[in-house]
Image (cartoon, rainbow, N blue to C red; front, side, top):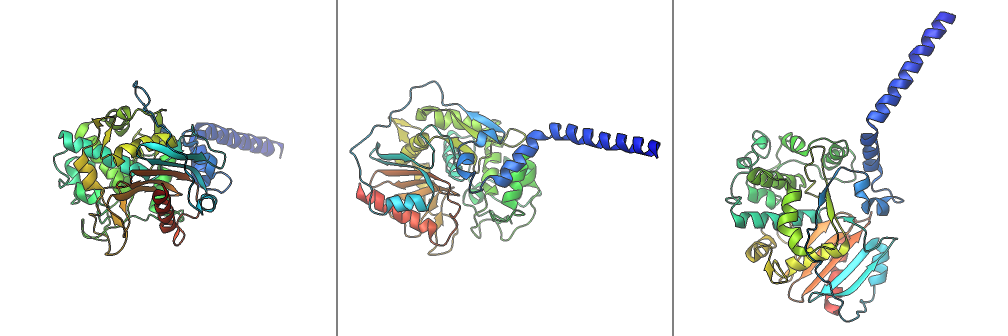
Length: 387
């Protein structure tokens, strides 16, 4: 019995030591996975959205060596009735309102501040659209009607084989992809785990083989389409998205702080939702878009691309919300009204005729509720009209 007990003790000790070794070896992956699983918890969401770099692999977005472009303050503004209640109800963490290039209101909530680099979520898609427009104008990409496999051959034989760049810009690839953020088994949440565990998004994207419609026939919001745009850009240029975005878009903007992208295990930028900037630096990008691609007299993004990409060109249902090339357009949109939109309350709202830009970051766990988005747009319109 003593011999058996001795060997049993050794076996248990070996198992414990092996578990410790595996735990240390995989500690970072385990921590990232735990963060993904608790990312949106009520008591952690605000902190997490300002500290994505502590939980995920990242790539820096260098602001460049140029001077910071000024964001001057204009006349003091009193926001319309109901704004305070909306800020509380929608768990807004920052609100910045600009008119004619001047800040008319700027405030931070829930313990956040002006130096916090907040996660963009799907507002990042609109940044990628702007970058794509620059590269198309430069001739790096021949046509938006080229097949995606021309630039991303890894997708040959996948559900994206046969889709054009226009299709993925419009979210009309027809690829079957479950975007349910609240289902842990959904494709969008499986994608999150790929990022957390250091997998590769290119391989994940190439694994999809099913379609619910032929490319170009129907619109359905499919975030993985944006990753395909990133694959096209990387294939066409032989360069990474972070490097290109910094050079072509960020450096001319005169940002105040460096930003960063969340990346997968291969260092590939999470282009569909992984940008992290301060609210003011989101506003610098937004002001450039508001001004048809110009800032301080420099044409950063072609004006005709902004005009085209912010039109409701996707095959959405008649009378429903519209979609362009990674930009949203309300069903009842006024001329020059469009937006970048991310889950949990991230917005870039544009009213070009009024010269108004509104930037919000948030931690709104009720963002998918009935009428919430339309209520946000109503609030933005009231603010714009009050200036």
